[in-house]
Image (tube, rainbow, N blue to C red; front, side):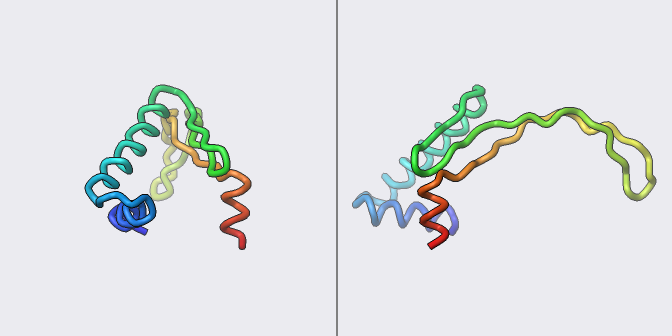
Length: 91
């Protein structure tokens, strides 16, 4: 499902215009991104949790030259599905 398909589905289910549904979807995405950027986690009971994990700096190897390279530390977003979401998908 693409973003435009999601917007259309939200508009249909919520009885909104596509323009309003797109604003709502964009606001939701922006809010999640802002929260994660600020170090918070977003927990939607029954759906899942968005949070940020940290990966430490480590040493890797260039597969072509076998040279050691330093891979910098990074923060990355993670989504963990909630129980009812997992159960609904499993059916």
